[in-house]
Image (cartoon, rainbow, N blue to C red; front, side, top):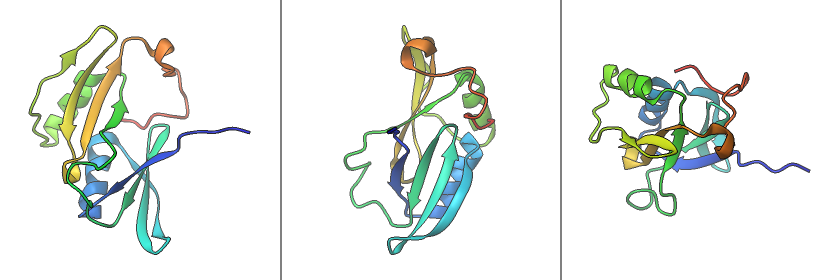
Amino acid sequence: MRVNLDHVHIFASDPAATVQFFQTMFGAIVVWDEVVAGARGIRLKIGRAFIHVYDQPPKAPRGGAVHHLGIETDNLDDLVRKMTLCGFVFRNSIREDKSFKYVVIAGPDDILIELFECHEPVRWGIRSDDKDGGTQR
Protein backbone atom coordinates (compact mmCIF):
# COMPACT_ATOMS: atom_id res chain seq x y z
CA MET A 1 0.00 0.00 0.00
CA ARG A 2 1.27 3.45 -0.84
CA VAL A 3 0.10 6.80 0.48
CA ASN A 4 0.87 10.14 -1.18
CA LEU A 5 -0.19 13.72 -0.63
CA ASP A 6 -1.80 14.41 -4.00
CA HIS A 7 -3.21 17.94 -4.03
CA VAL A 8 -4.32 21.06 -2.27
CA HIS A 9 -7.85 22.26 -3.01
CA ILE A 10 -8.40 26.01 -3.26
CA PHE A 11 -11.46 28.18 -3.71
CA ALA A 12 -11.50 30.61 -6.65
CA SER A 13 -13.78 33.59 -7.13
CA ASP A 14 -12.53 33.74 -10.75
CA PRO A 15 -11.40 30.24 -11.82
CA ALA A 16 -10.17 31.40 -15.24
CA ALA A 17 -7.93 34.06 -13.68
CA THR A 18 -6.69 31.58 -11.07
CA VAL A 19 -5.82 28.97 -13.71
CA GLN A 20 -4.14 31.63 -15.88
CA PHE A 21 -2.04 32.80 -12.91
CA PHE A 22 -0.71 29.30 -12.18
CA GLN A 23 -0.14 28.59 -15.89
CA THR A 24 1.69 31.84 -16.56
CA MET A 25 3.77 31.99 -13.39
CA PHE A 26 4.53 28.29 -12.79
CA GLY A 27 3.86 26.40 -16.04
CA ALA A 28 0.78 24.61 -14.66
CA ILE A 29 -0.95 22.14 -16.95
CA VAL A 30 -4.72 21.60 -16.86
CA VAL A 31 -5.21 17.85 -16.35
CA TRP A 32 -9.00 17.98 -16.29
CA ASP A 33 -11.82 20.49 -15.98
CA GLU A 34 -15.21 19.01 -15.11
CA VAL A 35 -18.09 18.98 -12.65
CA VAL A 36 -17.23 16.84 -9.64
CA ALA A 37 -19.56 16.35 -6.66
CA GLY A 38 -21.88 19.05 -7.99
CA ALA A 39 -19.32 21.79 -8.64
CA ARG A 40 -16.78 22.61 -11.33
CA GLY A 41 -13.27 21.50 -10.46
CA ILE A 42 -10.06 22.13 -12.38
CA ARG A 43 -7.04 19.92 -11.70
CA LEU A 44 -3.70 21.61 -12.37
CA LYS A 45 -0.37 19.79 -12.44
CA ILE A 46 2.60 21.76 -11.16
CA GLY A 47 5.77 19.69 -11.01
CA ARG A 48 5.05 16.50 -9.05
CA ALA A 49 1.89 17.75 -7.33
CA PHE A 50 -1.56 19.11 -8.10
CA ILE A 51 -3.82 22.01 -7.24
CA HIS A 52 -7.58 21.59 -7.52
CA VAL A 53 -9.30 24.86 -8.27
CA TYR A 54 -12.85 24.91 -6.92
CA ASP A 55 -15.29 27.18 -8.81
CA GLN A 56 -16.57 28.96 -5.70
CA PRO A 57 -15.38 32.11 -3.94
CA PRO A 58 -13.41 31.65 -0.71
CA LYS A 59 -15.61 31.09 2.34
CA ALA A 60 -13.33 33.10 4.63
CA PRO A 61 -10.57 35.66 4.13
CA ARG A 62 -7.04 34.38 3.48
CA GLY A 63 -7.12 30.64 3.32
CA GLY A 64 -9.21 29.35 6.22
CA ALA A 65 -7.25 26.41 7.62
CA VAL A 66 -4.60 26.52 4.85
CA HIS A 67 -1.71 28.86 5.66
CA HIS A 68 0.12 28.83 2.31
CA LEU A 69 1.13 26.87 -0.77
CA GLY A 70 4.82 26.04 -1.09
CA ILE A 71 6.25 26.00 -4.61
CA GLU A 72 9.83 24.73 -4.92
CA THR A 73 12.18 25.74 -7.72
CA ASP A 74 15.82 25.04 -8.47
CA ASN A 75 16.40 28.71 -9.41
CA LEU A 76 14.41 31.23 -7.38
CA ASP A 77 16.18 34.24 -8.89
CA ASP A 78 15.16 33.20 -12.42
CA LEU A 79 11.57 32.45 -11.35
CA VAL A 80 11.24 35.87 -9.71
CA ARG A 81 12.76 37.50 -12.81
CA LYS A 82 10.31 35.63 -15.11
CA MET A 83 7.32 36.54 -12.95
CA THR A 84 8.43 40.19 -12.88
CA LEU A 85 8.67 40.19 -16.70
CA CYS A 86 5.10 38.78 -16.75
CA GLY A 87 3.95 41.81 -14.75
CA PHE A 88 3.86 40.36 -11.24
CA VAL A 89 4.77 42.93 -8.59
CA PHE A 90 6.66 41.58 -5.57
CA ARG A 91 6.04 43.28 -2.21
CA ASN A 92 9.18 41.77 -0.66
CA SER A 93 12.59 40.73 -1.85
CA ILE A 94 14.03 37.22 -1.64
CA ARG A 95 15.07 36.26 1.88
CA GLU A 96 18.05 34.00 2.54
CA ASP A 97 18.11 31.36 5.27
CA LYS A 98 20.72 28.72 6.10
CA SER A 99 18.92 25.88 4.32
CA PHE A 100 16.79 27.74 1.78
CA LYS A 101 15.90 31.08 0.24
CA TYR A 102 12.34 32.21 -0.26
CA VAL A 103 9.84 34.92 -1.01
CA VAL A 104 6.16 34.92 -0.03
CA ILE A 105 3.61 36.34 -2.45
CA ALA A 106 -0.16 36.82 -2.57
CA GLY A 107 -1.80 34.90 -5.42
CA PRO A 108 -5.39 34.92 -6.67
CA ASP A 109 -7.98 35.48 -3.92
CA ASP A 110 -5.09 36.56 -1.65
CA ILE A 111 -3.81 32.99 -1.16
CA LEU A 112 -0.29 33.00 0.30
CA ILE A 113 2.32 31.27 -1.87
CA GLU A 114 5.86 30.63 -0.69
CA LEU A 115 8.34 30.35 -3.56
CA PHE A 116 11.54 28.70 -2.39
CA GLU A 117 14.87 27.23 -3.44
CA CYS A 118 16.28 24.60 -1.10
CA HIS A 119 20.03 24.46 -0.38
CA GLU A 120 19.68 20.96 1.16
CA PRO A 121 17.54 19.01 -1.34
CA VAL A 122 18.63 15.56 -0.12
CA ARG A 123 17.79 16.30 3.52
CA TRP A 124 14.45 17.84 2.50
CA GLY A 125 13.52 14.88 0.29
CA ILE A 126 13.57 16.91 -2.94
CA ARG A 127 14.89 14.98 -5.95
CA SER A 128 16.83 17.45 -8.09
CA ASP A 129 17.42 14.76 -10.76
CA ASP A 130 13.66 14.11 -11.21
CA LYS A 131 13.04 13.36 -14.87
CA ASP A 132 9.24 13.16 -14.71
CA GLY A 133 8.33 15.77 -12.12
CA GLY A 134 8.99 19.42 -12.73
CA THR A 135 7.18 21.60 -15.21
CA GLN A 136 9.42 23.91 -17.20
CA ARG A 137 9.27 27.49 -15.99
